[in-house]
Image (tube, rainbow, N blue to C red; front, side, top):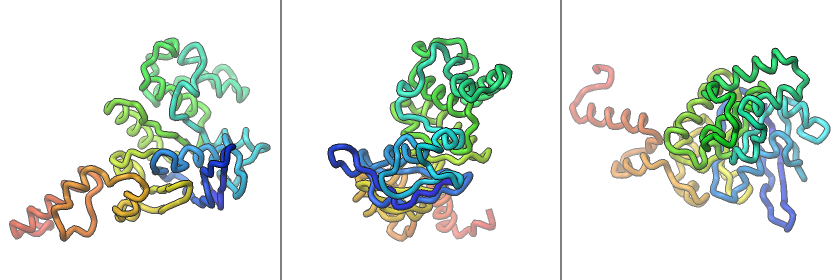
Length: 278
């Protein structure tokens, strides 16, 4: 679905944000782009739908080269959600804001209304359709910004730090929404530095360090090297540290679920019971 080849980008003033970045994202996958602040996450994501133009290298979405002449076509396929919803939402009411994109596609009033209703229901803000956007909480604004993109019916959803500044319940609501969209077939690319969140939702991880790809692979592959994670100025998930007391572990658990299974295995082994007997 997404192909990035040898992508380079330097901001005015000479700050190199991306250097020779190459990346493939399969259709229907859930990719977390991970890295410390300043690693190039946001810059990479903005290239995926043409918000930034490649200075060197190429980006393609669904086989279409991302460039100025294809910007409108790309934006129908790949929707972008900004980290700060105030950079994205602007209409007087929730309903108006969700409707803005479909209306600009030239759709009928009936189709615009249908999309508004569907997108609002998906993100759980249907009851807020008549509310002025300046009366929304930060979490509601986050969901509104996602709804406005979903109303365009994209095949790819690109999100820059979607859980930033949210409380735990708001974070859970957003991530469950993204997981449900992914399970329905949507390709998700999400930038984050929340290492505790990634193993619960993403299948693949691209770890950036100083504008370069440090490693790209599955969860075990990326988190399997504590040294690499720390050199990228991140850490292992907190649950992993609790299991460092077991020197015989070849793979540290990354989630509470994985930790529970490992504890069950150890308790059964101490009791002399084979897992198949339980």
